[in-house]
Length: 220
Image: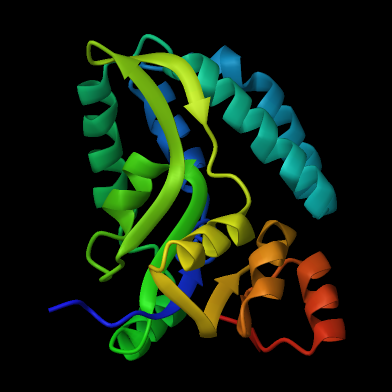
């Protein structure tokens, strides 16, 4: 029996499902375990200080871009099994730090919608974090490996609205009645694309934009 197609319900992870940055927690654990070099993330930490001082979304994006660049360089040469063990330990500790609203929403709409998680964080970590939430599709950054060792080649998750469009074109989800939940301007494209956008603890920039669009906002 062929399962009937349903609309998608799309979730961001960092700041939407997870109360922090999943990549940031992975990096911190990797440094603590001696897998990554603390010095390699010095530039990212400097930009993080600027972001925390001025709470500007542009600076936050610069911070995450710098963090990702350093992470990709550091993961080169790391064994896949060692990194997976690190990720498992991070998620086991951080698992409780998930917002209630997206988990409740996912439970309520599960019979009528197909759950899709899209994140710039490593997919291996995102898979672990949302594994018990009944999500059918997970998209995250992926990293090439040869003989069980990461090469340093990475493929980012890309534009979230483009992922939605691709799922629709492939006949996996329907567009009518679809939902998206996000918290920063990085989620703007998919929030604009769906029928029912929802802002969860949005950044000031996204909150201002959402008000002009009449989008509902949830504060948790």
